[in-house]
Every structure is written in structure tokens, then in C-alpha cells.
Image (cartoon, rainbow, N blue to C red; front, top):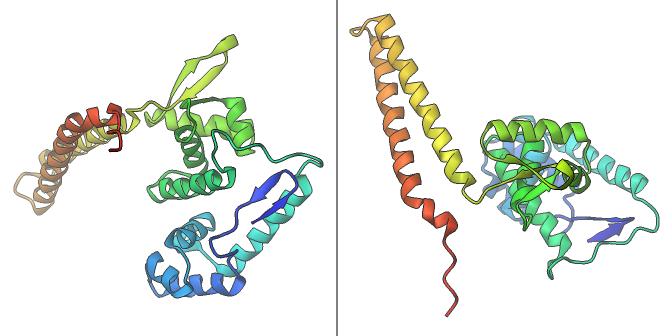
Length: 251
């Protein structure tokens, strides 16, 4: 691991990926290999390959030569913009800042793999890994080193998805909060979308005629997503208390 100016660049486990390794990732993706298999051939952790691909275009757009060039450019920009004489912040609560940053990157990559755009995933990860569970727009800008406009767009998206909420802080500044039961709320929202899909599919049954193959297909879709949605609601309601339960003390 090396330090440049005020920021530490987190090396990939075992050192930074080389240009040759990135080319092997490109070939592995072209052959349809899973991330785990590509990582095994490179003798790297699967998370390293996953993070590398998701950061550089995803499995469909990844190109090793472009990814290597982008990495060099990012490192160059960091060297240029790092303030002189700045000191690395002291670890908070005994935590290793480099390890925390590495974990946040892994979690962000996971959220991106589940469909969240990159900036939205970064903001959500930031909130999840903050002890208070809330940050102001200015704090997010500072932590993520992005523009206020990027933060504003990200929090608007996350709020619309029910993943975060706003609350008034001191001096009427807004803070963005991730509640402990955010996953419960997310599951319920998902169930509602299934319900809407089932209703819309059944509308098509009436339009296309109940005896047509298309109508039968739509009715099958409606029954399936309706069952899945109801199952999600039941499971979420039964498991909700887990989100607020204290972990058992170690014996």
C-alpha cells in the first residue's frame, strides 16, 4: 500500500492488477467464465475481479487496456489534486481507515451488481457504514469527493426508492438517514411492484381474450408474481424483528 499526498490508494490484494492480468480478465469474460473462475486463474480474490469489472464498464463493457489506462489516469489525478502537507486522518474507533475504504468499495460493488447506479450505491454505502446512520449533503460531498449536484441526484433517487429519508438537522440543514429497517421497507416496496405487475397482466387477459395463448401467458405471469409478492410480505413481516434484535453476547 502506498500513500500519495493526503490520500491512501488501496492496492488490490496481492498488489495492483497488472495490464496482463486485466487482459486475462477480458479474455475470461469473453469466454463466459464466472468471476470466481477468472480470479482462481489469476490467483486473486473473487472480490478483486468483481470490483475491477464493475468499476470499468461491467461484464459487457469491460476492456483490459481501457481499464488499465483509466486506473493510471485516476492515480495521476490524485497525485495532482492532493493538498500539500495534509495528514492522513487518525483511525476512528480503532478502525483501520484503509480497511474501511476497501470494505466500502466491496459493498458498493455489490450494490451496483444488484442494479443501483454507481453514485447511488456509493451514497448508500456511506450511510450504511456511518455509525450515526445519517449525513448531511456537505458531509457526503466531503466523504465521497464529488460535486453537490451528484449528491443531490443520488439522494433524490434513493429517497424515491424508499431507501433513505430526509430529516431536519441543526440550523435547518437537511440530513439523509438510512433507517435500521430500510431493508424491510425495500422488501415491502418490491412486493407492491409485484402486485402492480400482476394487476397489469390481468388487464391484458381481458383485452386479449381469456382463451388466447397470450392471455394464458399473462395469467401465468400474474399468478406467479402475485404469489412471490405475497411470500415476500409474509417473510418480511416475520423477520422484521431480526433487524432490531441485539446480537447474542459471546459465551
